[in-house]
Length: 348
Image 1 (tube, rainbow, N blue to C red):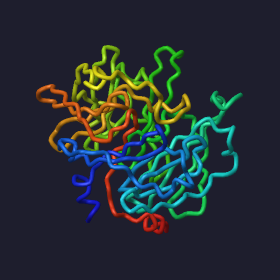
Image 2 (cartoon, one colour):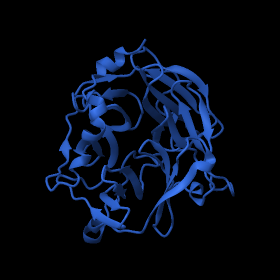
Image 3 (cartoon, rainbow, N blue to C red):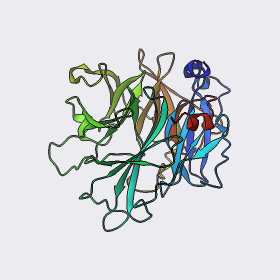
C-alpha cells in the first residue's frame, strides 16, 4: 500500500556526486517548485565495503549499486531504511584486467514475484581500454536471495551505457553501440525480458536521431520514449505508444535551444562524471528526467543544471536547489519502506 502511494508522494531524484568524494543526495520531485527545496545527503552504511560506487538501477525504493571501477561487488540498498545486502561475487573470468565494462539492469518481475539483476560482461582486448569486438559479451542473471549468478550464454549485442536506460513492460531497454564507420548503420533498440530472460530487437522509428549516440531512451509515464538531440541544440521526444509497434512511434514534443542561467553566470564545470572510463556514455549534454505531475518536463543540462519546461508556453524555469553540487548524475527513484532482507527472502 505504501509503495502504491509512493509513486506520487515519494518520487525523488537521487544525486550521485564524485567530487570531492563519492556521496549521494536526494530531493523530492514535488519539492522542486518550493522555495525551501534542498538536496539532502543520504547515509551510506556500505561505504567501508564500497567507497567508490555508482548507481546502476532503481526499483520499488531499492537501489542497485556497483563498484565504480571493477563492477564487483554489487549490492542492493534502501536509502530510506539504510539497510543493504551484497549480491554474490561473480568470480570466474570476471577478473580485473580482462573486463572492458559491464552493463546492468535491476528490476522486479511481476510474473515470478522476484527481484533480478542482469549483468552483461563486455571483455577487453589488448588493453583494459580497448574492447575485444571479436568476443561476444557474456550474460549473467541473479535473483535476489539466490547463492550465485546464473550464466545465460552470450549475446552478440554491444550495448551502450552502464545500466538500462528504460524499464517498460517488465523489460530492460538499451541502445546498441554504433560503429560510425558503418555508413547507414543505425543503433538498434534491444530489450531483455525479466520473465523469459531473452533478448529481443524492438521496432525502431525511421528518424535521424538513432544514427547518433545522443539518443538516450527514457520511460515517460510508463511509455518507452527516445530523446533526439540535434546539432542546433534543439530536441525532440518520441514515444512508442503501442509497445513494439513501429507505426506507433510519434513525435510528442519539440524543445527549443536553451542555455541555463548558471552557465551564463559561472560557465560549465568540465570534468567527466559517472565513470572515469571512456565507455560510460553517461555524460549527457541534455537529458529528459521525467514528466512532472503538473505536466512540465524535468530536464538536466550537462549533468549540472536542472530545468523545468512548460510545453504549452515553451517557458524554461531554472531550478535552484540548496546544497547543489557542481556536477552529478541523477537517478529517478521512488522512496519506499520495502526491506532489503524481505526482497532477498522473496526468492522461491
